[in-house]
Image 1 (cartoon, rainbow, N blue to C red):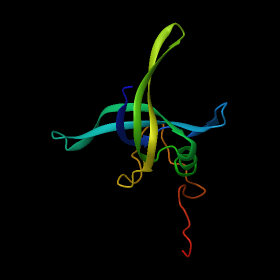
Image 2: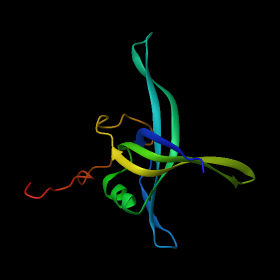
Image 3: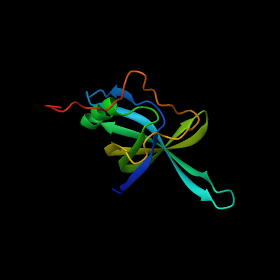
Image 4: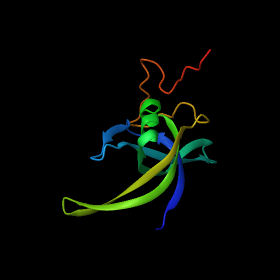
Length: 136
């Protein structure tokens, strides 16, 4: 079986959604967007380039970690198997890009995400993903 391993560096576009399969396995899905940026030498400003969108699927223990640590707008690094799936909707064929994740992490190099329409950082009640260490 052909499997393409990739790493996507981008931002969480949708809040993670938790569900359980008929077999009792947990899965979390969220959308991620990765956008290239380049410096326009004429204006001296950064401009957006192409964007890549994918649905990220996380299973079992990884699903639990994603649920407690990630939210819409967070900078993220996701690695796993890339695949496409075709389906018919309303008489038209569509293709979705999915990443079956085997590792997810916050991208600490990016800090707060840029102002991207449709994205926000809901943090009124405190930060997600913080863990208290023993003795600390």
